[in-house]
Amino acid sequence: MVVIGNIQLGDYPLSLAPMENVTDPSFRYLCKHFGADLLYTEFISSDGLIRNGRKSLKKLKISDHERPIGIQLYGHNVESMVQATKIAERSSPEFIDLNFGCPVRKIARRGAGAGMLKNIDGMVKMTSEIVKTTQLPVTVKTRLGWDEDTKNIVEITERLQDIGIQAITIHARSGIQLYKGKADWTLIGEVMNNPRITIPVFGNGDITGPEVAKSMFEKYGVNGIMIGRATVGRPWIFKEVKHYLESGEIMPPPSIKEKVETAKLHFLKSIESKGLPRGIFEMRRHFSSYFKGLPDFREIRLRLLTSTVEGEIIQILDEIEEKYLYLEEL
Image (cartoon, rainbow, N blue to C red; front, side, top):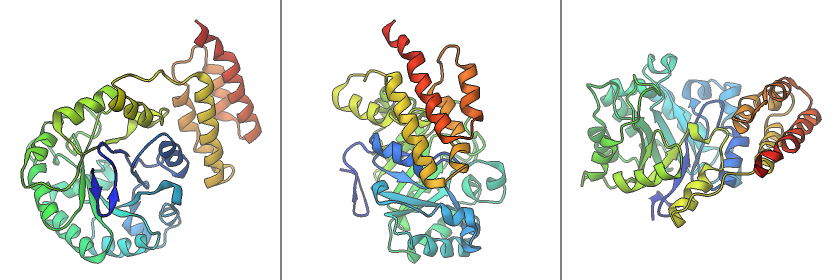
């Protein structure tokens, strides 16, 4: 049983990676529906929170059906992060997660996100102050190190555990790698083999399907797995992984009817949480992913991505189901 604070997550928990402009309430709803055990908000700027930034404050909104959920914060200033933690607590998440892994240049060059990997003492100091500030469990998401010469995640995990974090998620790339190259889980395995490490360790990076997930559990002994980019257009991946872990069998892919129903649900939840027209605009990045690979899809895709009318979009989705049902009969 994997436990974070008083959160019981089962034996092989799966978490949804926090992704900016992706893991909003509507997408989190779907991933929870398909079996994600642990959710996070999109990452939230500490500076934005303490300045009452509208976008940052809106990201604090969480719902009971999402629990357990953590609010993820990032920033480069200790005092700002401490203040932001106090603000985040008001939303009553199950835990606070600190983002020391985002490699985006505008964030990292300020010393936030993965930029913290260039200042481990500062990372430890910031984390220590936040742990002292809140009664909630504090967790961390980070990377192997900043570059090839500083992959010191074993030391980092020890130091963060020693000052009180209750779980860590490690993305198996360095900061300067961004999302390029192949994720290297070897050092995550070294963390797991370190007898000093007692907190849950989640692995992240290149989890593309059930077989990969199972092999990472077995080969590296991680306590849990975080799935990121592979969930886009495929929120049912959590159900697929769990089915494979339990049975050793690959689930049949969802039918076109099931994909359309999922896209509709996602669309309606997007409108529910963001209103019109924003709920329509922000679904566009997902629609193409849901129906990737369908033949002769260009014209329908264009209509789907340019319509601004809710009823028309529902009608287009119905057309997709009707038009492509024949593929399942081949």
